[in-house]
Image 1 (tube, rainbow, N blue to C red):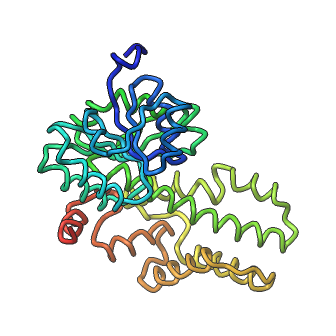
Image 2: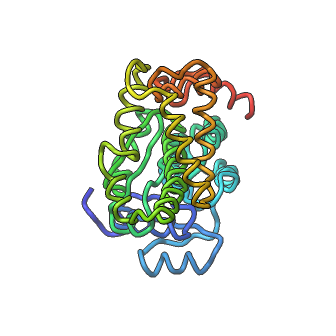
Length: 316
């Protein structure tokens, strides 16, 4: 859509003008007439001055837009806003949740909106504020195919990459899991750095080693998870009992060097259990079988399978 004056451009409503909300406003304002709501008068004023957002004090005034974008700090706030807004929304209105929440929160929001004919899409933002403002954001999206198609042009304005994962909740699941991996890996890297410092290994040498595709950071994903866990192929390779031995060596090194371990110490437990469960001679990626047994779900199954959905439904 060509950029036009505010009187003829399509209207989009945005609730939440905090740091990320303001960044979202900056992107939307390049193509849309943006109605912006926030409890803070200062934020409303700043969004108006910087991006031409039309500030509204009453949340109900957002209902004139066919798409409502949420950028709020907590899922219960999103639910509260939508409860207030729903009576004023027209059937067919699309709600785009950009805040980071759990899939269960998205299902609850969907169920809240469905009786009013209001549709919900999750678009988790896998980027920082600066990336969003610069137009280099990545969105992790979930929703019904027809809803994603309807909101597609808006998503393309928000992000340079739009990655679609499945139905409502799948985008948020991807974001939360990705963040969990990043945060856990950060602890592992700091522990590794501390062991390197204690044994005279230079940090840049350690970083160079771990960046190698065949080293310990990337290969567990590209080889063991993708080629083994996703195919349930554990024949050959490095045995689990050998991985347990190497893990024991790392624990001994840390103890000798006086380096506290948390993530690496915890990970060792899984190898002890796996050997005890008879997985010692299989490739060490076979520790995945422990979680498959505990959860009753194969790793290669749907990200949001029916058993999880049923459990979540029982909690609603």
